[in-house]
Image (cartoon, rainbow, N blue to C red; front, side):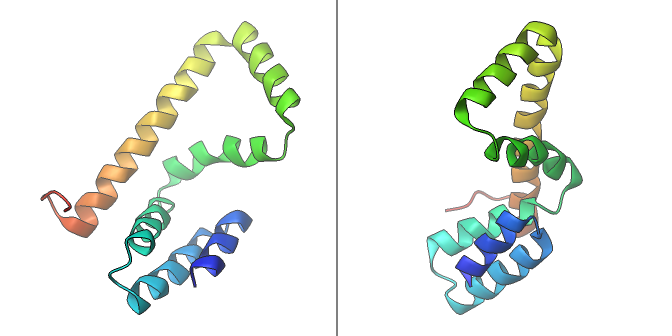
Length: 111
């Protein structure tokens, strides 16, 4: 089930990924990797997180030298926008992670 969830994630089908991961966790609820992957799949529900993932999907298709040249040009031309994007990416990452943690575990710490 986890392999199917990973394949759905690669295709960008996040609802199907969540469904497969929910099934995988139900089959083996004590497995730490399944729990972590399920929490990760829950994060894809949020539009802000998916918007921040869009450049990652685009960058995966590029070669390393293309990425380097693109970042250098963007840094020279749009320095404030690049910094803003990096800040937004970290904000989206940590805020969705916190929201999912509260949804799943409540306000207590996970052990």
